[in-house]
Length: 332
Image (cartoon, rainbow, N blue to C red; front, side, top):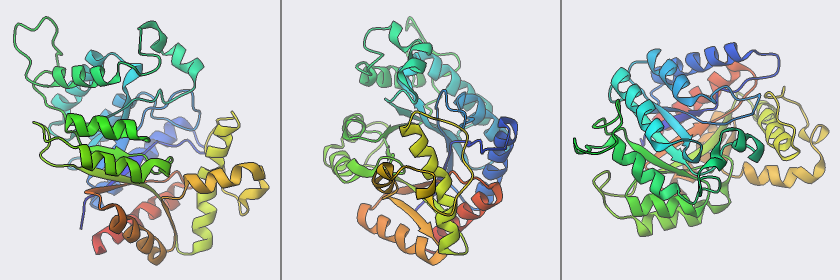
C-alpha cells in the first residue's frame, strides 16, 4: 500500500456559510486521520466565493490544532503572491506550534485572476507579476527554513532551522523541471490539469538530482474521487465540481453549486469537451469502479503517493467518497 493523502479546498457550497465550510474541513480532517490519510493539504485561492482557504496558513493551523498525527500543509502556497521571508515565518511558526507535521507545497501560479493579483500587490516587484523570480524565491525560502549562519543579515524568526519540508507543485513541465533540479518532492495537479501529466512525470524522473532534501524522485499523483453506492449517484455528485469549472471559464465564480442530474442542462455544450478533459484523471463511480480506475493510474504512473480531491456539495456524501478512497487504498 502506498501512502494516500487529501487535498481540501474548503469548499463553500450554495446555501452554506463560510463558517460552516471551515467547520466541515475540521470534521473532514478528523475523519481523514481516522481513515489513515497521510497528509491533509489546503490550497491558496483568492477572490473565489466557493473557497474558504484563502488565508491558507491560518486554516492549516486551525486544522493542525484539531488533529494529532496526520501531516498538515499547503498544496499549496502561491509563492509569487508573497515575500519568501513572510512564508518562512508563517510556516516556521506552524512548525513551532505543531511540531514536525507541517508541509509546505509551493506553486508559481497566482491562484486567482489578474485584477486580484494586482490587489495582492504582486505587480510591485520586478519579475514577480509573471513568476520570473520563482526559482530564486524558492531557494530563498528554503534558505530561510534551513540552518542560516548567525551573521546572516536576514533570518526568519520563527523559521530558521525548522527545516519545514518544501514540495514543488505544478500543472505544467516547468515545476517538474525545477523540482528535479532542486531535488525536491513533486506533486502534479492532474486533478484539474492532466494534459501535461505524462510529460511532466518523465521530465521529473529523468532530470532528478539527489539533494540534501531527497535521495530519489518522490512523485505524488493528484486525482479527484467521486465515489458513491451507485455509478449514477457518483456522476450526480461530480456535477457540482463540473459546474464550478464551467462557471470559472465563463467568468462567473461562485459558491459550489447544487448537483444536477444532467450537466448539459446547466452548462453550455461548448464547454463539455473541456470538462471531460479536466476530469480525465479522476475516479468516478462505485467502490469497485474507482478501485479499478485508481489501480490503473497507479500502474501507469507509479507514484510514491496519491492525493485525492473532491468538491462535493453534500458534506456527508463528501465524507463517504473519501472514506471509500481510503478503503480502496488500504486494500491495494
